[in-house]
Structure formats: C-alpha cells, structure tokens
Length: 84
Image (cartoon, rainbow, N blue to C red):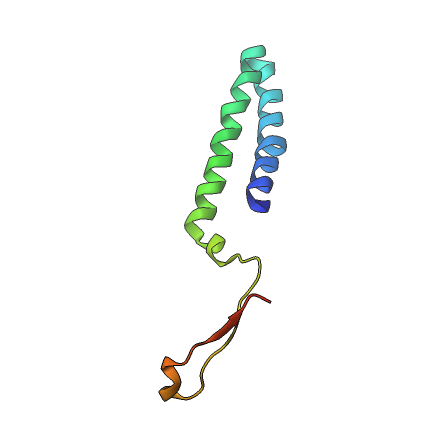
C-alpha cells in the first residue's frame, strides 16, 4: 500500500494542485475542476507503469525459511518450512 500512497500524493501535490492553479487563471472555476481528472490520469499512468514492471510481485511480508533436503534420494522427504 506504500507505493500506491506515493502515487496518490505525487498526483495530488505535483499535478492536481499546480494544474488547478494554472488552469484557473485561464478558465476560472472550470479550470480548477479540470485539474482533478488530469491528476487521475497521471496517477493511473504511474500505477499501470509500476504494475507492468513486476516489482510488486517481489514484495513479501515474511520470507519463509526452508530446510531443503541435500540428497537427491531425499526428494520425497518433507521439507521443514516455517514463517519465522
């Protein structure tokens, strides 16, 4: 949830607020409202880009610890895995 939060903050403070300020000078209150969908498009573009990189697949809360059998004949042996 940290990465989407960063995208939201970036879209809000780096795009929505400046776009609303700039557009309000030219279009009045309609320009303020156009800042919102502009920031949404930027936020979606960031999220889609992050999704396609695949970095989100590598995030884990707790890495499992497993004792893997060393001998090939022990392949039927039960692996001792725990989450701590």
